[in-house]
Image 1 (tube, rainbow, N blue to C red):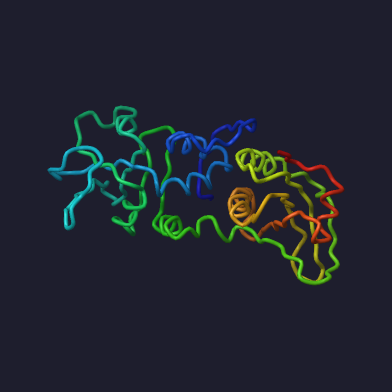
Image 2: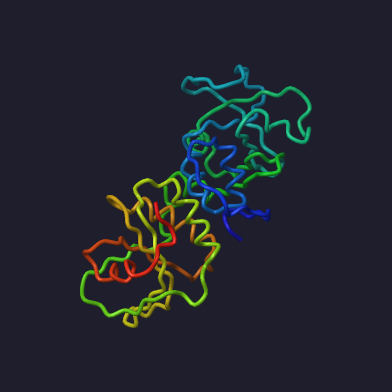
Length: 259
């Protein structure tokens, strides 16, 4: 099971717009992996709504003084409902009466209630459960790392590279959506690589032709690709330029994405 376990039909003809609000981003992320890295990046800085109890603090976004006690409403199993807007509290008329609520940044909420499981928009058609270990990885930034390897050619190495026998259509479609909002990316290429000396099996390699460093880009792309891979599978990314011999191969094939 993945980080987003939803089963809804997705539309592959999309482009990623990082100006959309968190609520819309969550809805899109449930069906399209290309939006999930952006969701995890944004949730820390976005305002989230929690239901409070007997807080004697006016509803809304407030600056709390030190040692202020806030009683956050949770379910019987300890899970905390969180909402992307006040409208989502009343979805499906689960909540019918007036309630007390508070608005705070995602990062502050996750730090305040460390160890808790959060249910985002639990009454809506599109929701998300955040487990404690997942929250920790969001806070540390590790949620977007360790999803891929950036290949660096440090010495003369003989490898086999070509096109995969089976074209990874779903992966490519998601990467196209992700890359549509990356102005520094000029082109992206696909290959299948095998290094007999490495002991690793043949695997996908993505060549990225971009201005500047590609580390941040490969983190998001690697996270997106990981949604389609088995636990023991991995991919490589390499920067396409004239400084490495693998780039000669990518320049000889058509890119699957071009700015």
